[in-house]
Length: 116
Image (cartoon, rainbow, N blue to C red; front, side, top):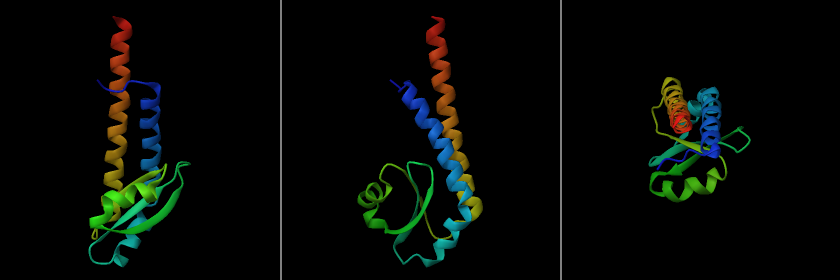
């Protein structure tokens, strides 16, 4: 059963806000990509207060362990060499669209239940 709680809706709203922060920093993210060592990806971070906190080089083989360590209570997005500003903005737009769809689904289900 999907999470229809007010907290789930609030998380989706925060995701939309965070996607905008990543998008606003697309140029900074892309500028850091050429410095990636072989076998690494770039992890961009937004903290719990919705501030962009920079990027980290993370070895691909250590992603699963490292991302939770550097992400903390915030959000992380992973980028590979060759990503463009347009790619970053497309991914952040998709992130926000998915969150908006989640909000709409929660609202529809709750409205339907209230009407029953």
